[in-house]
Image (cartoon, rainbow, N blue to C red; front, side, top):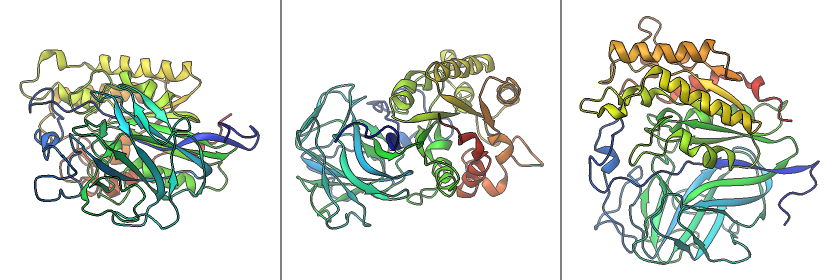
Length: 428
Protein backbone atom coordinates (compact mmCIF):
# COMPACT_ATOMS: atom_id res chain seq x y z
CA UNK A 1 0.00 0.00 0.00
CA UNK A 2 1.48 3.42 -0.87
CA UNK A 3 2.32 5.88 1.89
CA UNK A 4 -0.22 8.25 0.36
CA UNK A 5 -2.89 7.63 -2.23
CA UNK A 6 -4.25 10.29 -4.57
CA UNK A 7 -3.30 13.51 -2.80
CA UNK A 8 -6.68 15.01 -3.62
CA UNK A 9 -8.66 12.29 -1.84
CA UNK A 10 -6.77 10.87 1.17
CA UNK A 11 -3.85 11.59 3.46
CA UNK A 12 -2.26 10.05 6.55
CA UNK A 13 -3.05 11.62 9.91
CA UNK A 14 -2.36 10.65 13.51
CA UNK A 15 -5.70 9.60 15.01
CA UNK A 16 -4.56 8.42 18.45
CA UNK A 17 -1.36 8.69 20.41
CA UNK A 18 0.28 8.85 23.77
CA UNK A 19 3.49 10.44 25.02
CA UNK A 20 6.26 8.11 26.12
CA UNK A 21 7.94 8.66 29.45
CA UNK A 22 11.34 8.44 31.07
CA UNK A 23 12.05 5.32 33.10
CA UNK A 24 10.99 5.68 36.72
CA UNK A 25 13.80 6.09 39.29
CA UNK A 26 15.32 2.85 40.51
CA UNK A 27 14.85 4.07 44.09
CA UNK A 28 11.99 6.13 45.52
CA UNK A 29 13.04 9.73 45.84
CA UNK A 30 15.44 9.46 42.91
CA UNK A 31 14.17 12.73 41.45
CA UNK A 32 11.61 15.48 41.91
CA UNK A 33 8.15 14.12 42.61
CA UNK A 34 4.85 15.29 41.14
CA UNK A 35 3.63 18.11 43.37
CA UNK A 36 -0.07 17.44 42.95
CA UNK A 37 -0.13 13.71 43.66
CA UNK A 38 1.14 11.57 46.55
CA UNK A 39 4.87 11.14 46.13
CA UNK A 40 4.72 7.37 46.49
CA UNK A 41 2.15 6.83 43.72
CA UNK A 42 4.68 6.72 40.91
CA UNK A 43 6.52 3.93 42.71
CA UNK A 44 3.46 1.82 43.56
CA UNK A 45 3.07 -1.70 42.20
CA UNK A 46 6.61 -1.77 40.80
CA UNK A 47 7.17 -5.49 41.36
CA UNK A 48 8.81 -6.97 38.28
CA UNK A 49 6.64 -9.04 35.96
CA UNK A 50 8.35 -12.25 34.82
CA UNK A 51 6.55 -14.81 32.72
CA UNK A 52 3.51 -12.50 32.88
CA UNK A 53 2.95 -12.89 36.62
CA UNK A 54 2.82 -10.35 39.43
CA UNK A 55 3.67 -12.24 42.61
CA UNK A 56 0.64 -14.54 42.89
CA UNK A 57 -2.22 -12.04 42.63
CA UNK A 58 -3.29 -10.21 39.48
CA UNK A 59 -2.80 -6.45 39.51
CA UNK A 60 -5.97 -4.41 39.42
CA UNK A 61 -6.71 -2.30 36.38
CA UNK A 62 -5.36 1.15 37.14
CA UNK A 63 -2.10 -0.08 38.67
CA UNK A 64 1.20 1.28 37.42
CA UNK A 65 2.87 -0.08 34.32
CA UNK A 66 5.07 -3.16 34.77
CA UNK A 67 8.77 -2.36 34.96
CA UNK A 68 9.79 -5.71 33.46
CA UNK A 69 8.11 -7.91 30.84
CA UNK A 70 9.13 -11.44 29.91
CA UNK A 71 7.88 -14.02 27.38
CA UNK A 72 4.49 -12.34 27.28
CA UNK A 73 1.75 -10.76 25.21
CA UNK A 74 0.63 -7.25 26.07
CA UNK A 75 -2.80 -6.14 24.81
CA UNK A 76 -3.83 -2.46 24.96
CA UNK A 77 -6.96 -0.50 24.00
CA UNK A 78 -6.96 2.77 22.04
CA UNK A 79 -9.88 4.81 20.70
CA UNK A 80 -9.71 6.24 17.18
CA UNK A 81 -10.65 9.95 17.13
CA UNK A 82 -10.94 10.28 13.32
CA UNK A 83 -11.71 7.45 10.93
CA UNK A 84 -10.01 6.13 7.82
CA UNK A 85 -9.68 3.32 5.29
CA UNK A 86 -6.25 2.06 6.36
CA UNK A 87 -4.07 2.25 9.44
CA UNK A 88 -0.57 1.81 10.77
CA UNK A 89 0.83 1.62 14.30
CA UNK A 90 3.81 3.43 15.85
CA UNK A 91 5.91 1.58 18.42
CA UNK A 92 8.46 3.41 20.53
CA UNK A 93 11.54 2.42 22.50
CA UNK A 94 12.37 6.05 23.20
CA UNK A 95 13.28 5.46 26.84
CA UNK A 96 14.13 1.75 26.91
CA UNK A 97 17.48 0.53 28.12
CA UNK A 98 18.19 -1.98 25.34
CA UNK A 99 16.79 -2.99 21.94
CA UNK A 100 13.41 -4.72 22.22
CA UNK A 101 12.34 -7.62 20.03
CA UNK A 102 8.66 -7.73 19.05
CA UNK A 103 8.00 -11.20 17.63
CA UNK A 104 4.38 -10.58 16.61
CA UNK A 105 2.01 -7.62 16.48
CA UNK A 106 -1.73 -7.59 15.78
CA UNK A 107 -4.53 -5.04 15.65
CA UNK A 108 -8.23 -5.84 16.06
CA UNK A 109 -11.51 -4.33 17.16
CA UNK A 110 -11.88 -4.41 20.93
CA UNK A 111 -14.74 -6.48 22.31
CA UNK A 112 -14.68 -5.90 26.08
CA UNK A 113 -12.72 -7.50 28.88
CA UNK A 114 -9.47 -8.85 27.45
CA UNK A 115 -11.22 -9.93 24.24
CA UNK A 116 -11.13 -8.85 20.61
CA UNK A 117 -13.85 -9.20 18.01
CA UNK A 118 -13.73 -12.43 16.04
CA UNK A 119 -12.45 -12.15 12.46
CA UNK A 120 -11.28 -8.55 12.99
CA UNK A 121 -7.59 -9.27 13.59
CA UNK A 122 -4.95 -8.01 11.16
CA UNK A 123 -1.27 -8.90 11.25
CA UNK A 124 1.13 -5.97 11.48
CA UNK A 125 4.46 -6.08 9.65
CA UNK A 126 7.50 -3.83 9.66
CA UNK A 127 9.37 -3.52 6.38
CA UNK A 128 7.52 -6.63 5.24
CA UNK A 129 8.61 -8.68 8.25
CA UNK A 130 6.47 -9.85 11.13
CA UNK A 131 9.28 -9.60 13.68
CA UNK A 132 10.91 -6.27 14.43
CA UNK A 133 13.61 -5.03 16.79
CA UNK A 134 13.03 -1.58 18.29
CA UNK A 135 16.48 0.02 18.67
CA UNK A 136 17.18 2.05 21.79
CA UNK A 137 15.68 5.50 21.31
CA UNK A 138 13.78 4.60 18.13
CA UNK A 139 10.18 4.91 17.05
CA UNK A 140 9.04 2.71 14.14
CA UNK A 141 5.83 2.54 12.11
CA UNK A 142 4.21 -0.65 10.92
CA UNK A 143 3.43 -1.16 7.25
CA UNK A 144 -0.01 0.20 6.23
CA UNK A 145 -2.93 -2.22 6.53
CA UNK A 146 -6.27 -1.77 4.74
CA UNK A 147 -8.79 -1.45 7.57
CA UNK A 148 -12.04 0.54 7.60
CA UNK A 149 -12.32 2.17 11.00
CA UNK A 150 -14.88 4.85 11.93
CA UNK A 151 -14.19 7.62 14.44
CA UNK A 152 -14.82 6.46 17.99
CA UNK A 153 -13.85 2.83 17.35
CA UNK A 154 -11.99 1.03 20.13
CA UNK A 155 -9.03 -0.92 18.77
CA UNK A 156 -6.85 -3.45 20.59
CA UNK A 157 -3.13 -3.71 19.82
CA UNK A 158 -1.43 -6.95 20.89
CA UNK A 159 2.36 -7.34 21.02
CA UNK A 160 4.37 -10.47 21.77
CA UNK A 161 7.68 -9.87 23.57
CA UNK A 162 9.52 -13.22 23.53
CA UNK A 163 12.56 -12.32 25.62
CA UNK A 164 12.92 -12.16 29.40
CA UNK A 165 13.44 -9.14 31.67
CA UNK A 166 12.61 -6.54 29.02
CA UNK A 167 12.30 -2.94 30.24
CA UNK A 168 9.37 -1.23 28.51
CA UNK A 169 9.01 2.33 27.35
CA UNK A 170 5.69 3.30 28.90
CA UNK A 171 2.92 5.79 29.34
CA UNK A 172 1.83 5.15 32.91
CA UNK A 173 -1.54 6.90 33.18
CA UNK A 174 -3.33 4.96 30.45
CA UNK A 175 -6.85 5.02 31.98
CA UNK A 176 -7.92 2.32 29.51
CA UNK A 177 -7.67 -1.43 30.22
CA UNK A 178 -4.53 -3.34 29.30
CA UNK A 179 -3.37 -6.89 30.02
CA UNK A 180 -0.23 -9.00 30.19
CA UNK A 181 -0.55 -12.71 29.40
CA UNK A 182 2.00 -15.54 29.09
CA UNK A 183 3.42 -16.58 25.71
CA UNK A 184 2.25 -15.52 22.27
CA UNK A 185 -1.49 -14.87 22.47
CA UNK A 186 -1.61 -12.09 19.90
CA UNK A 187 -4.13 -14.07 17.79
CA UNK A 188 -6.24 -15.20 20.76
CA UNK A 189 -9.76 -13.81 20.86
CA UNK A 190 -9.62 -13.75 24.66
CA UNK A 191 -6.47 -13.88 26.77
CA UNK A 192 -5.88 -16.66 29.27
CA UNK A 193 -4.18 -16.08 32.63
CA UNK A 194 -4.13 -12.36 31.95
CA UNK A 195 -3.00 -9.71 34.44
CA UNK A 196 -4.71 -6.34 34.16
CA UNK A 197 -3.19 -2.89 34.40
CA UNK A 198 -3.93 0.51 32.81
CA UNK A 199 -0.85 1.82 31.02
CA UNK A 200 0.63 1.71 27.52
CA UNK A 201 3.82 -0.23 26.75
CA UNK A 202 5.73 0.71 23.56
CA UNK A 203 2.48 1.84 21.86
CA UNK A 204 3.02 5.46 20.79
CA UNK A 205 0.43 6.07 18.09
CA UNK A 206 -2.08 4.95 15.49
CA UNK A 207 -2.37 6.67 12.09
CA UNK A 208 -5.21 6.37 9.59
CA UNK A 209 -5.57 7.11 5.88
CA UNK A 210 -8.25 9.78 6.10
CA UNK A 211 -10.23 11.92 3.63
CA UNK A 212 -8.64 14.96 2.08
CA UNK A 213 -8.76 17.92 4.45
CA UNK A 214 -8.53 15.77 7.57
CA UNK A 215 -5.95 16.96 10.09
CA UNK A 216 -4.69 16.38 13.62
CA UNK A 217 -4.65 18.42 16.82
CA UNK A 218 -1.93 17.47 19.34
CA UNK A 219 -2.43 18.41 22.98
CA UNK A 220 0.97 18.91 24.63
CA UNK A 221 0.04 18.93 28.28
CA UNK A 222 0.49 17.81 31.86
CA UNK A 223 -1.68 15.73 34.21
CA UNK A 224 -4.83 17.75 33.48
CA UNK A 225 -4.60 16.79 29.80
CA UNK A 226 -3.48 13.25 30.66
CA UNK A 227 -6.73 12.69 32.53
CA UNK A 228 -5.74 12.57 36.21
CA UNK A 229 -8.92 12.91 38.23
CA UNK A 230 -11.22 11.44 35.55
CA UNK A 231 -13.08 8.12 35.70
CA UNK A 232 -10.83 5.25 34.53
CA UNK A 233 -12.16 3.47 31.47
CA UNK A 234 -14.68 6.20 30.64
CA UNK A 235 -12.52 8.18 28.16
CA UNK A 236 -13.29 11.45 29.91
CA UNK A 237 -10.03 13.48 29.70
CA UNK A 238 -10.78 16.81 28.05
CA UNK A 239 -8.81 16.02 24.84
CA UNK A 240 -11.16 13.03 24.34
CA UNK A 241 -14.20 15.23 24.97
CA UNK A 242 -12.81 17.77 22.50
CA UNK A 243 -12.40 15.00 19.92
CA UNK A 244 -16.05 14.04 20.33
CA UNK A 245 -17.13 17.66 19.95
CA UNK A 246 -15.17 17.91 16.70
CA UNK A 247 -16.51 14.58 15.40
CA UNK A 248 -20.06 15.85 15.96
CA UNK A 249 -19.50 18.80 13.61
CA UNK A 250 -20.36 17.64 10.07
CA UNK A 251 -19.51 21.09 8.70
CA UNK A 252 -15.84 20.56 9.63
CA UNK A 253 -13.42 18.17 7.90
CA UNK A 254 -12.34 15.25 10.14
CA UNK A 255 -10.26 16.42 13.07
CA UNK A 256 -8.28 13.91 15.12
CA UNK A 257 -7.07 14.76 18.63
CA UNK A 258 -3.91 13.18 20.03
CA UNK A 259 -3.47 13.40 23.80
CA UNK A 260 0.25 13.94 24.45
CA UNK A 261 -0.25 14.83 28.10
CA UNK A 262 2.07 13.46 30.78
CA UNK A 263 1.29 13.69 34.49
CA UNK A 264 3.88 15.87 36.19
CA UNK A 265 5.22 17.29 32.94
CA UNK A 266 6.99 20.64 32.85
CA UNK A 267 7.85 23.03 30.05
CA UNK A 268 11.42 23.64 31.15
CA UNK A 269 12.81 20.60 32.93
CA UNK A 270 12.50 16.83 32.86
CA UNK A 271 11.24 14.96 35.91
CA UNK A 272 12.44 11.47 36.81
CA UNK A 273 9.75 8.92 36.09
CA UNK A 274 7.28 11.52 34.83
CA UNK A 275 8.50 12.70 31.47
CA UNK A 276 10.93 14.69 29.40
CA UNK A 277 10.21 18.41 29.35
CA UNK A 278 7.87 19.86 26.74
CA UNK A 279 10.89 21.52 25.11
CA UNK A 280 12.68 18.16 24.90
CA UNK A 281 9.74 16.14 23.57
CA UNK A 282 8.15 18.61 21.16
CA UNK A 283 9.76 17.09 18.06
CA UNK A 284 8.85 13.50 18.95
CA UNK A 285 5.37 14.08 20.36
CA UNK A 286 4.19 16.79 17.95
CA UNK A 287 6.28 17.21 14.80
CA UNK A 288 6.85 13.49 14.16
CA UNK A 289 3.12 12.77 13.86
CA UNK A 290 1.54 12.91 10.39
CA UNK A 291 -1.15 15.41 9.54
CA UNK A 292 -0.63 17.75 12.51
CA UNK A 293 -1.91 21.29 11.91
CA UNK A 294 -2.52 22.52 15.48
CA UNK A 295 -0.79 22.08 18.82
CA UNK A 296 -2.52 22.96 22.09
CA UNK A 297 -0.04 23.91 24.83
CA UNK A 298 -1.49 23.19 28.27
CA UNK A 299 1.49 23.32 30.60
CA UNK A 300 3.18 25.59 33.11
CA UNK A 301 1.47 24.72 36.40
CA UNK A 302 4.09 22.15 37.34
CA UNK A 303 6.93 24.52 36.48
CA UNK A 304 5.47 26.86 39.08
CA UNK A 305 4.40 24.24 41.61
CA UNK A 306 7.60 22.21 41.79
CA UNK A 307 9.47 25.22 43.13
CA UNK A 308 7.21 25.31 46.17
CA UNK A 309 7.60 21.69 47.24
CA UNK A 310 9.29 21.65 50.66
CA UNK A 311 12.94 20.71 50.34
CA UNK A 312 13.04 21.09 46.56
CA UNK A 313 16.51 22.19 45.35
CA UNK A 314 16.83 25.76 44.20
CA UNK A 315 17.76 24.45 40.74
CA UNK A 316 14.19 23.17 40.34
CA UNK A 317 12.63 26.59 40.85
CA UNK A 318 11.30 28.57 37.90
CA UNK A 319 10.17 32.17 37.71
CA UNK A 320 7.13 33.37 35.82
CA UNK A 321 9.47 34.85 33.23
CA UNK A 322 11.17 31.46 32.85
CA UNK A 323 7.81 29.84 32.09
CA UNK A 324 6.91 32.58 29.63
CA UNK A 325 10.27 32.18 27.87
CA UNK A 326 9.63 28.42 27.55
CA UNK A 327 6.21 29.09 26.03
CA UNK A 328 7.77 31.52 23.58
CA UNK A 329 10.31 28.93 22.44
CA UNK A 330 7.54 26.41 21.82
CA UNK A 331 5.52 29.01 19.90
CA UNK A 332 8.56 29.71 17.70
CA UNK A 333 9.12 26.00 17.03
CA UNK A 334 5.49 25.46 16.11
CA UNK A 335 5.51 28.41 13.71
CA UNK A 336 8.82 27.31 12.20
CA UNK A 337 7.07 24.13 11.07
CA UNK A 338 3.88 25.83 9.88
CA UNK A 339 1.71 24.82 12.84
CA UNK A 340 -0.83 26.95 14.64
CA UNK A 341 -0.39 26.90 18.41
CA UNK A 342 -3.15 27.45 20.97
CA UNK A 343 -2.26 28.46 24.52
CA UNK A 344 -4.16 27.43 27.64
CA UNK A 345 -4.06 29.44 30.85
CA UNK A 346 -2.79 27.81 34.05
CA UNK A 347 -5.67 26.55 36.16
CA UNK A 348 -6.15 27.23 39.92
CA UNK A 349 -4.40 25.17 42.58
CA UNK A 350 -5.57 26.92 45.75
CA UNK A 351 -5.91 24.45 48.61
CA UNK A 352 -2.87 22.39 47.62
CA UNK A 353 0.38 22.34 49.57
CA UNK A 354 2.18 24.24 46.78
CA UNK A 355 -0.22 27.18 46.95
CA UNK A 356 1.24 30.36 48.43
CA UNK A 357 0.78 34.04 47.72
CA UNK A 358 3.98 33.90 45.64
CA UNK A 359 2.96 30.86 43.57
CA UNK A 360 -0.43 32.46 42.91
CA UNK A 361 1.27 35.69 41.86
CA UNK A 362 3.40 33.70 39.41
CA UNK A 363 0.34 31.93 38.02
CA UNK A 364 -1.43 35.22 37.46
CA UNK A 365 1.65 36.72 35.78
CA UNK A 366 1.89 33.80 33.36
CA UNK A 367 -1.85 33.92 32.67
CA UNK A 368 -1.82 37.66 32.05
CA UNK A 369 0.85 37.12 29.42
CA UNK A 370 -1.01 34.21 27.79
CA UNK A 371 -4.22 36.25 27.60
CA UNK A 372 -2.71 39.55 26.55
CA UNK A 373 0.62 38.79 24.94
CA UNK A 374 -0.80 38.15 21.48
CA UNK A 375 1.86 35.53 20.71
CA UNK A 376 -0.34 32.44 20.53
CA UNK A 377 -2.52 31.99 17.46
CA UNK A 378 -5.47 31.50 19.81
CA UNK A 379 -6.02 30.98 23.52
CA UNK A 380 -8.37 28.92 25.67
CA UNK A 381 -8.98 30.39 29.12
CA UNK A 382 -9.04 27.15 31.09
CA UNK A 383 -8.50 29.15 34.29
CA UNK A 384 -11.77 31.01 33.72
CA UNK A 385 -13.52 27.76 32.79
CA UNK A 386 -12.61 26.01 36.04
CA UNK A 387 -12.21 28.62 38.78
CA UNK A 388 -14.76 29.19 41.52
CA UNK A 389 -16.53 32.55 41.08
CA UNK A 390 -16.30 33.44 44.79
CA UNK A 391 -12.73 32.15 45.29
CA UNK A 392 -10.97 32.34 41.91
CA UNK A 393 -7.74 30.94 43.38
CA UNK A 394 -9.56 27.61 43.76
CA UNK A 395 -11.28 25.15 41.44
CA UNK A 396 -15.06 25.38 41.30
CA UNK A 397 -16.32 22.78 43.82
CA UNK A 398 -18.43 21.12 41.13
CA UNK A 399 -15.28 20.53 39.06
CA UNK A 400 -12.88 19.42 41.81
CA UNK A 401 -11.89 15.74 41.76
CA UNK A 402 -10.97 16.08 45.45
CA UNK A 403 -7.31 17.06 45.34
CA UNK A 404 -7.99 20.75 44.51
CA UNK A 405 -5.98 20.70 41.28
CA UNK A 406 -7.31 18.00 38.95
CA UNK A 407 -10.78 18.51 37.50
CA UNK A 408 -13.29 15.66 37.60
CA UNK A 409 -15.26 14.43 34.58
CA UNK A 410 -17.53 17.49 34.72
CA UNK A 411 -14.54 19.81 34.90
CA UNK A 412 -12.98 18.14 31.90
CA UNK A 413 -16.23 18.73 30.01
CA UNK A 414 -15.97 22.41 30.96
CA UNK A 415 -12.45 22.65 29.54
CA UNK A 416 -13.47 21.02 26.25
CA UNK A 417 -16.50 23.32 26.00
CA UNK A 418 -14.22 26.37 26.36
CA UNK A 419 -12.69 25.70 22.92
CA UNK A 420 -14.01 27.66 19.96
CA UNK A 421 -14.18 24.93 17.32
CA UNK A 422 -13.96 27.50 14.53
CA UNK A 423 -10.24 27.68 15.31
CA UNK A 424 -9.93 24.23 13.70
CA UNK A 425 -11.73 25.05 10.48
CA UNK A 426 -8.83 25.82 8.13
CA UNK A 427 -6.02 23.31 7.60
CA UNK A 428 -4.56 24.29 4.24
